[in-house]
Length: 321
Image (tube, rainbow, N blue to C red; front, side, top):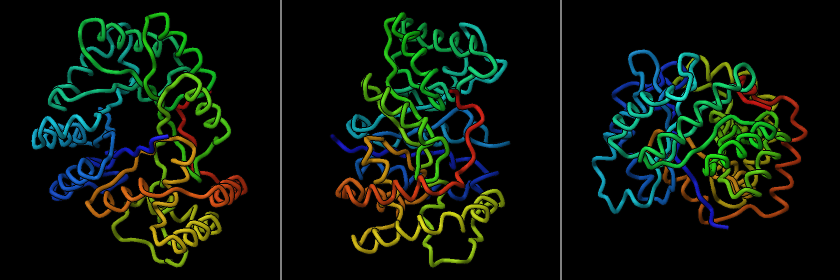
């Protein structure tokens, strides 16, 4: 198995959760350049990333940064975006304009287009129409692979069949997957289906918004975190303490970071973790997971602690069954 990691860009333009400011853009350029240099195989964005006046900012920044690297460098990495199935985006043409807008923001660098979340709980027909829309775009000559995000095992099987009827294959499925993620039994079923159908299994939020990176010995809250992130940390710090102690001990024993241990828990299971990074140092640190693996004993210990931890992060309300 070839281990792969990806760079997530949700924070690039998000003020509400990540305290984005334009003065961070130079750091983000360095982050991007270092990711390419260090062997990240995927950069993941979305047309909904960026709050308020910074709507679409993540794609715009990524598109701008891509103009500053050579064609040979681009060959080593795939660019993926997610299109949001907003209620007003419906029918067999609902994604036509959003796709073209994303393509423009990304300066025609787009390898994978994913449905950002499932509409099966409230409008399954919309989801099917939009996926058919992506197939139509393929057949019109737009070259990209099709992916899904926030999908459950039951719905995934149905959508595999839907795309097979169009002669298409699902390239990747992206779900919330970490030691503190909710519904791990359901995500395990998704992972098995992906394995059986040769679909790339992508793990978003592998560090649980940074919570799994926090050392158990560090008590103070960070002034750099947003109000929302501080709320999450305050809710889950105590209940995740035993798990974070185990991460810390493994990290100390191996002379690696706590973040690397948490990410390697995902890699151990064949997932491609999508790690949100905002500076060069984070990129360098996480890239080191490519050079080592958890032992079976270490994985089992962390897995057991994750199962015993009953206080999980909130489920994505748009994830399907």
